[in-house]
Image 1: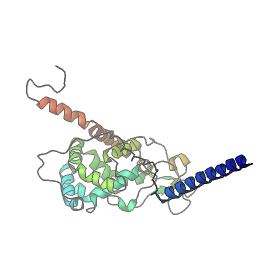
Image 2: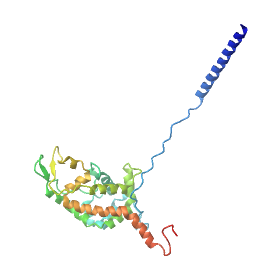
Image 3: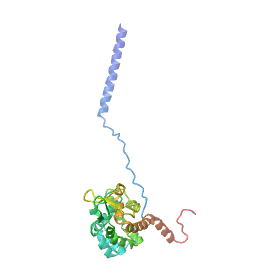
Image 4: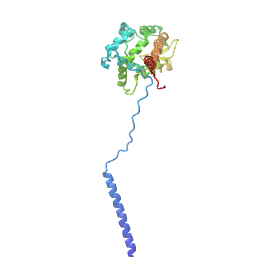
Length: 279
């Protein structure tokens, strides 16, 4: 009888020791500081720049002003390219860089913030013929756009692109301040140009409806177009053709200028030098 009793006593002691050991260990672990096992997600890399621009000329006549002090310098620079009278007639004098950036960002979207446009309002009101159920855009409405279109038609796009490159840091700053800290404004400009170039070319009457205060396109597909594409329709096919031609010129300048800069550097390289690593 003694032997079983001793075995039982030993088993009880062993079990008690194991229980005490694990109880002490659990208590000890509870006192240790918690380890943060949360996985740190790396920040998403900035999207690749598709249409890089060269830096502005290092020998510019004057350094760029601060963004909030750029209205007069940009207004004057545009006057040299477009003519002072045209710039005074078309553009608002204040917040020019910021309003240009906002409008370019909005043109390829559904809605355009009218109060943030850099241009002054068109003369007169929108003109339609017919009634609310069977109206069309009156061709007289196209005349309202003619002063703007004529100013754009006479543009030297290469000079305009050079001005754009010089002031580009301000456009970039204004674009990032809109909530695109990793965005590249020139890429956004190219997207907007492509969107405007994709506007349908319609030479027939465009039907309108007026469900409320504002006229709308009767064709739902046209009403779903971007704000810029609908603007192209409202100005008429002749005016739109002029604008599209200039947009194609501008697109070539803001997408090919890096290659032009490389060709210029190669042309100006000293004789006997090589622009490549091959020998």
